[in-house]
Image (cartoon, rainbow, N blue to C red):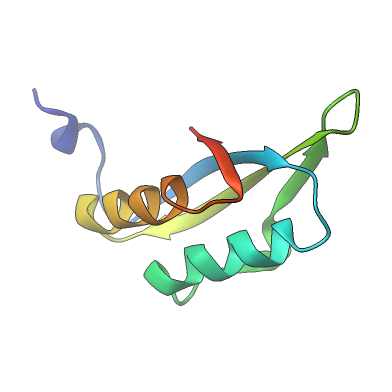
Amino acid sequence: MSNAELLEFPCDFPIKVMGETRDDFAQTIVEVVQQNAPDFDASGVEMRASSGGKYISLTCTVRATSREQLDNIYRSLTSHPFVKVVL
């Protein structure tokens, strides 16, 4: 079974994004996600700061419609200069 067969679309898919803490991190990440998922609802974003406060993580749950859409979201996020890790 391939990875593409493990998910049935559409589905809710959580994406965790981590980067250094900055005032515009959350808004910027939401905008990047919305480029590939225009119906993404930013009100459901979960945000956590690291214990030292240097890093922040966001969990963005998107209503994914295809594997291609998820791949595009991951590509956009991993190539953004604010982002350190995408899971």
